[in-house]
Each structure stands twice: as structure tokens, then as C-alpha cells.
Length: 312
Image (tube, rainbow, N blue to C red; front, side, top):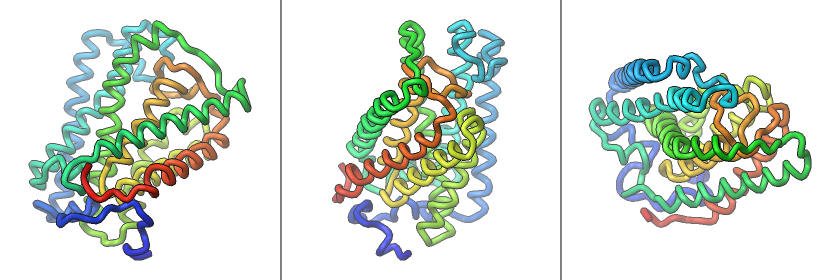
């Protein structure tokens, strides 16, 4: 499929600079520099995680031992919070590593990792975030009506309120780090050597998909859960490439994760937080259909109907 027929309304009229997925050509873009940057990013993540582990271990060794895999109901809240932080804070080092590598190795600024436009389009990100949360709540309501035993009300108000500020800080960092790495840096690295958009979408999709296959819900949910993560990986990468930036993908991803960490958790989650509901991990057939439906409605309502003329 040619570039001319690829986009039915997602990509705005392009400014003079390169499109988002082509910005790997900017600055220093020799092939060996991409090979150099990945170990640099990994080293920063590992070093930061070790330092953080020492700090958490000094505060509460059991926060590391649980590794984010213990049920918060069976742990002291201090231990549960430290365990959650130990799981989530490495994403801050991933974000730092990508930004530093992009600047120090390639000579590109942060904006090149976020958007192909003159500035980041906050309106798009916030609209996508809001729509995803509303659609997810609608699906939750439908699930409760169709199968109340599969979506159980488990709210613990005290624990929920204690975790809430940590989730609202750490989850956006986690989402931003994954978006900047997988759909910013990696998309542009592939775009540096490949001129076909579908290839640029496919490779980072597979990498993001593979990186999430060891999540607790995926292990418990089997092939249906694997398919859910595959659909999500593809749609987020599609939005970043065809939408000329991370605005929509960041909003969608943040909506999904906030919903999972605050509203409806998975029974076998490896990142347990107090949520309002817990879903049966065996119900992923419904989850797959719901995910496809949510993304389709999001695309039709938010993306396809808007032909953004430029930065907002």
C-alpha cells in the first residue's frame, strides 16, 4: 500500500520538516550510532534500578522481595507501596536513557521523540485519554450486566486513596517512557532504514508485544490475552506513525493503564494496586472483542473525523 492511500484522514498537512516516523534521519543518523544508543539506554536503566533497589532495600527489604508480585492485601501498605514503586520507577530511568541517547548520540531534542509537528498537540492527547476512559467504563458496565460474577466489586477505600497519588504520578511516567521508547525512538530507528510505513509499524509492534507477553494477565489469559496485547500494540503504533506523533497513542495508552491500575484490575496482575473492580482472567474472549470495539469507536470518533491542520 502506498503512502498516498495509507492514510484516510489521520495525517495532517505536513510542515516542512520530516514526518514523525522519518525523524531518525535528523541529526546524527549513522547506523552504528543506533547500535551504540541501545546499550547506553540499557546501562542507564540498569544503573538506576540498582541504585533504586539499594534505597528500597534500606527502607524495607520485603518491598524488593515481593517484586511487585505479591497481593497488596497480604502485605503491609508500606511494603506494597515500595514494591509498586520498585516495579514502576525503572520506567523513569528508561525515559531518561532514551532522552539522553537521543540528545547525546543523535543530537536531537525531546520534541523529535514526541511529535512531527511544530509542538506537541495536547488537545489530541487529552481527547484520546478521555474517550478511552469513557468507552472503557461503558464496557465495564456492560460486563457487570452480562456477567456480574466475572467483574467483582472489591473497593477498599482506605487502600485506594493511599495508592491513588502514587498511581497518578508513576503510571503516566511508565506510559510516557514506553511511548517514547517503542513508538518514538524505535519507530524512528526503523524509519531511518525502511521507507515503507507498514514495516515501520510492524517491527515496533512486535517488539512491544513481545515485551509484554510475560505479564501476569497474559500468562493466565492464554492466547486470548496474547491477542489483546497484540491488538493494542498494533493500534498504538499505527496511531503514532499515521498520526505524525505520540499525541493519540499516548492518550490511549494512558487511558488504558489508568483504568487497569485504578478501576478494573486483573485477578493475576503482577503489578497489584487497589482497584474498584477485579476481572476474571478467564474472560479474555470478551476483553478481546471489547478492545477491538473500543479502538474502532475511538478511531471513528476521535481520529478519522478530525483532519488536524497543524499544531494545536
